[in-house]
Amino acid sequence: MAETTTGAAALPKGFRSAEQGWPELHRIPHPPYRLPLLGDVLGASRTRPLQDSLRHARRLGPIFRRKAFGREFVFVWGAGLTADLADESRFAKHVGLGIANLRPVVGDGLFTAYNHEPNWQLAHDVLAPGFSREAMAGYHPMMLAVADRLMDRWDRELAAGRAVDVPGDMTRLTLETIARTGFGHDFGSFERGRPHPFVTAMVGTLTYAQRLNTVPSPFLLRRAAHRNDADIAYLNRTVDDLVRARRTASGDRAGDLLDRMLETAHPETGERLSAENVRRQVITFLVAGHETTSGALSFALHYLSRHPEAAARARAEVDRVWGDAAVPGYDQVARLRYVRRVLDESLRLWPTAPAFAREAREDTVLGGVHPMRRGAWALVLTPMLHRDPEAWGTDAERFDPDRFEPGAVRTRPAHTFKPFGTGARACIGRQFALHEATLVLGLLLRRYELHADPAYRLRVTERLTVLPEGLRLHLERRRTSHAEVPSEARCPAHGAGD
Image (cartoon, rainbow, N blue to C red; front, top):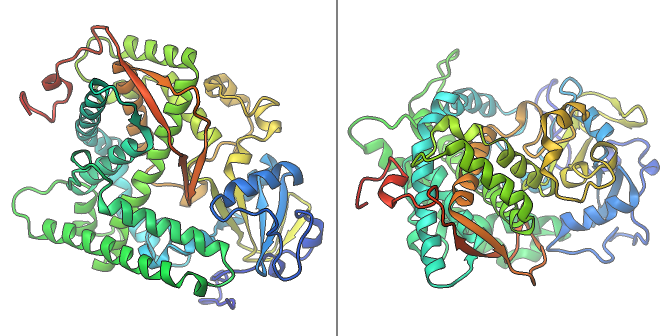
């Protein structure tokens, strides 16, 4: 795609192969056995391109490049280079190829907007109060209500002697949580034997967006493109129905994210989100607001099941902090400091949004070594950044929540832990996700012992986000006073007999 600009101040947009922006590209290593025209495709996986890149990263070092079908990419994972890329005065978010492939779905939503598009700042300023402490405290009872439905499901699976489908159930949980707290909608995920069609359509669009990166021409995906069009149409219809129901509803407003989108004007300009942009933001939040958190919870449960000493320590903290309270209060969740460290360590090893891209605002030199022209970009491989031995030690592959003990955090260089991206365009909902995930881990640890299948080996599925494939856990109900809370007392959002 040819470079274009929008005014003198705008950065170039559209895909830009690395040779266009890196004058000394030859100094950056690439995999051996590069083929003419095709590039570095020998041994490449179409379904696990991230894990391919991690394999090359270990061999080639903290900056390297890969070429496929005439398109060259620069990857960075060294802690020092990443810290340089995090400098907001010199670098900005780059909407990389995989993310740009989602623009037919969500257009200029918060996650996919180009930096020059005004709707990003408008939406950010309108929606940021929806993630304030006061707003989060209001979401807490609804998070408890959805977690209650998850535990009812797990109790039934336990009674039937079945292992639980961890990624599937975490997807149900996180979809219902963002749908209820953000948009007052119930997808009925826990009452379905199969995933809700919204999830199926969402997975389809994410998978198609990734597949576009692995073929020389979209023409080769004609049949998949038709399915993708149908998936996008379903997502649009679902959200249009949701918004229409809210616009026509009578009575008091919920004050949730959807109300903010429909009713709130920008505090300075008075501008409001257009109907089209409301749709795009709702889809963005429904997709991004549950897909990444689902993976984070799934990886955390995997590691807890494999590290019983960490699970016992986390469970003891839950019992101590929450005591005999029927349900934890909002402030009690933040006091689960070790549980949060378990979550952070899981996100270190497998950040569920596993890369972010940065582009040069002006001509610059990365790390004092690699010249970059204005608009040149690099992709930060977050799982490798989180394994850099210079920042995390020689045992960086080992699961150890105490890496996030406050003293250890203070001694580590800045910009070495980036599961939510960096800078002004970092994930707006990160506190929402962390509160939800910490709460859910605490509730599950309080209620169950988690037992791994000894034959299971971690396999990672990629669809722009990552999650553990085929993870199933066996449960055992804890026999303590803390775990035996009557169902009508578990959640203030449910009455007796609900």
